[in-house]
Length: 204
Image (cartoon, rainbow, N blue to C red):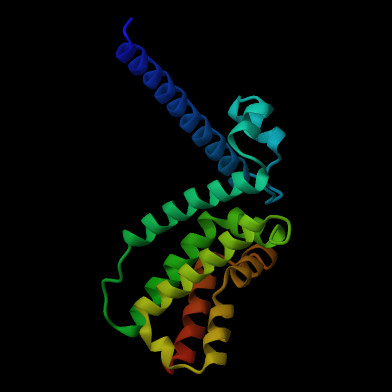
């Protein structure tokens, strides 16, 4: 085998190892997210649980990710990509303010329901993992920006009213009403929409 053939062979081996490494990382990330989404305790899984669920050795998990914080960071990146894709494919068809509010609250509750464990675990683990705190802040800022893009009228409110509205329709408010008080999503949607309408000087 000549020098050029050896270089090509070595390059192919490196590419193959890189491809396997990427697939392994994807498998670990997908397993971590799946475990979290189905966890009754809304806690991020341990490295041992991830290794068992993904059928990958624990040492391999830590070869691919330096620690749980870096793994969770990769999970947040994947979740945010899905989140962004979901928002891109949604649009408020009706231009009236009241219907835009209804559309946006419906969308917000759908997101809360779908990513319930992600939001809840982020609140619980905000001090434990840097990436969790950053991901939680990024997600909430994206939702706030989404609200302002579709309902720019909210920017006419005072800063305290803007903060109050953001709190009223936050994940924490939905979670408390849904999990603790057992209200249906439709009841919560109606209430969130009503409160938003009131703050924007519409009839509730």
